Length: 601
Image (cartoon, rainbow, N blue to C red; front, side):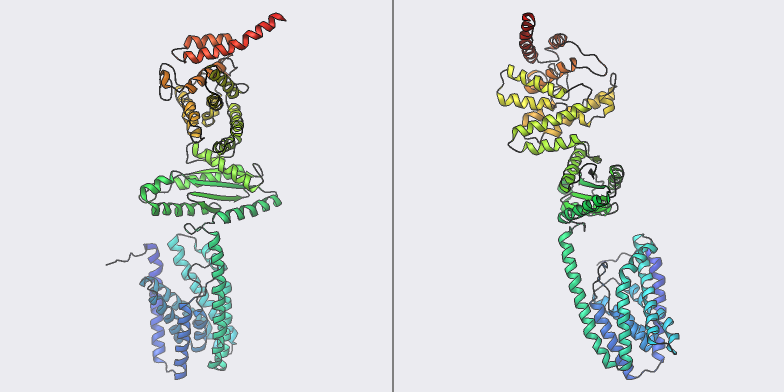
């Protein structure tokens, strides 16, 4: 046995008085109708109007912008019955038609009672304003007054219960409803006027209206059906947001408009963090509910689209980068504050790109925002990131990793290495110098050409994780505090996560372990000796040598001979002795010809 749940108290505070008033006027009308003698023609006419009103109410006319099934043409017959036969008789037609159809549709009794009470009060208002006009006023005035009063009361009472239920402003919701309904109700008032005029001449002439009204209904249904089909082709059925196709069309149009008006346009790409975990743990229906809730939050900020899976887009016309970052941050905060039943909290990451500051072309803007989104995910999730050039280089490198073009991959790696160097404390191209030294050491150690090139690639990217380290730590002109040192020592793991999908397995592993010490006291895993990958040992030595021989904010550089001596002193404790020997031999083989040439000159 099912038990219906009563609406909240605030909704009942609207429903109960309206139902009580509706019941009162209905009883009064029934009593007035019962004590008044009626001709057979009048009763037949009322039954005919009731039948027409019931049929019209059973098959409402769909209207664009109204999601409640459409507008019922029973309004035409209700207004006509009140003007032709008076308030009591008209209320009989106005109330019985929706009562019959809504009971047939098995709507909740409380809703039926409220809807019937609303039309009863609306009919009472229509009768009250039209009755004084029966003496000498034209039919136009009587129908206009009755239609206006019935429309106004119906609009106010229906809007009131919706506003209270949804906790929305009554005034703003009423304005919105008037904009949508005023035209169709004005047309129906005109149809009611025609019906009254024809009926007063001959009730049989009113049958002539059946054809036009039926045609209007069928035509409107066909038009709305076509519009809904078009919308369905552009709408994601789960969230009601625009789909992938609609997104591209809208972005193209908004870009053209922004360029014509010299206005900024920002694209935000939004991705749900760890959405696969939600589906795996709670099931796909729960995941669908999450996406629907997120869609409602995105609508509050701008025009939103679902691109597929857990990916969304948000268009912000007129927003420059600063204001867009503020808006996107508010989206992230609102979603993080959601508490979803059984699931708990959910977070999103957002990538931001702005036209024309970052790109003017549609595809470029999407690519930049996508790379910024990738960076937001890698940087820790539940955050917003705007486009930065180094973000793009990493995304491009990942794209090239799946392709056969090794040269293109190395070019992208070199470009990304330059972006890393631009943020670090070294002068010049530290990553490139370490890459060159590491490659020469690998060759000196007899590694095959392929491993030499992999060593070069890994060495060029060994500090990639520093892109996620705050600049105030990287550029601090003095020793780091313990918390700052712990943050800095995370850069190998960050670099590993960023590189593990490159498609060249050793590279990410070597970057992860390039600060492991030969005695096992390094980080992140404390690996000792030969357990440290050879590529990582080579990079560690090359990195240390370049650090010592480069000018830094808080330390002067040393001579190459002094750096080699320091490396030899720490060989066997901090560094792999073989790697140190390979570097010393490689640099010595270069320096010896230089000395000979200097003596000869």
